Image 1 (cartoon, helix red, strand yellow):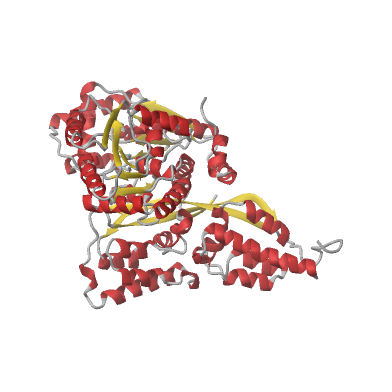
Image 2: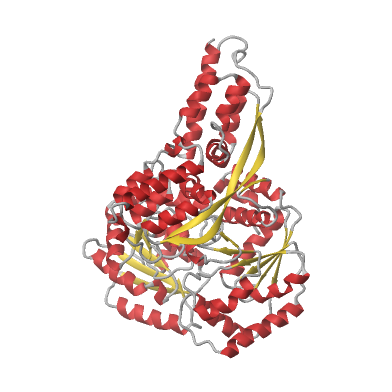
Length: 232
Length: 407
């Protein structure tokens, strides 16, 4: 620590960041696909919460897998249909660049239909028991008893909340609630005037981290900023 | 002494328990009446025995009642159970009459009270006939694999199912196109139960010595009932393919079901087949030998679950929770528990199973990594704390609409 009031140069918000957490219940649709054309057919018509589930549940359920394919479509096409080329294309869709489920759906359908265009790929059938089952995410968001007025408090809370809370503010807020950025960046910029830090967090591709890795990365970015504040 | 939620903090973390309490706060005071067909024995009773006290601890007024039925009724429901699993059963018109008559009797004898009536499995399904006179939400919880049901039984049950507000299944492949909402809630294991708790090396060694298992040789194990659907003979074939290259031993261990003629027949065949090979240990142990099963799982090098069909296959979760590299058939709920090459290896044939077991025995580092991943996967998704959370969310979903619910 340097000086008597090391963090005095960092702002304090009028409106604190109030942390929210979220958990899912999985709703079954009864719809299934055994081959690629069926997958494409249902992808066009299913509820957006179905697309959301299959492109995001891996993040919370299989934390240790990252940076493995984060979406079920890629996994199924690779493992059940043995179409590794298409699997790779689907897994490399940069979900981070989409700001709505609608746009993500269009991209998924376009990639699959492009593959189907030759008419050769639809011969592969999933074996019995390996069909693709469409599942819908029902999200429940609820406030947790934590709030932060400045970056120090923010990083302290970030250490103790669950990954579900981080998930809510980073993923759910952006793609499902269609906000222009993640909640953390929006608050830091608006309430603390921390545009650069907000930009750094916003630029992260959260899909390539595990949730714990993402927590650690954001904390590191904030701590770097805090140590800059101390140096001033 | 019964466990409290605080006992799970060291396993899942304080945050998870805190969140569970926050969510439960929203369901506080709800009366949830569970009904099933038996108070003891069987998976459903085991789940309710654990869940009801925890729901109560969380402030939910959870109750549990059991329907009554005679021998004839339970014979019919056993046939229904098998038929819903896809087995061929002789079902007569009289069977349907017996089922309806007992249902009617229970409907008259049990006056259900509660905000939510939580009916488990087909036996008490006709209680839905009380729906019109109750201001309650009705859930039908199906614990059975109905992915390929006998259509006579399924069509008979459908008019009852369709009148519920919501149905719950254990695996995606069990869902059917229904006019009501359906949720996926997987079963879970209790990490503090005798079957899953940590054991000392001493306890493990004593169990193995009792069963005359060589402690020095790698152990491949399948834990299951002696049932054709668990393919114990296929496991022996796979093991013998492995044994050509690697010196190891096989344990086939499971509960002894002397009242089930099929189980007796399968066990006899397995024993006959295994008699030729001194490296195969067939252990028919009394049901309830949870510490023994736990010790065998913990002593194993690789665990296999080569089922042909599987309701959910919680033995896979048990193995993964113990950090064991696991090879399992890609059937039923197993695919939810094992992500191929990440938290275990999936197989589709005897040869595939043998190849996977060899890979794990010969690559201990790889096997260790899969086991570690598997344990984390179970921690996040298949422990009873998650199960409890899903049930509370289910109760809350009945009172709210939409896909994004602000509590």
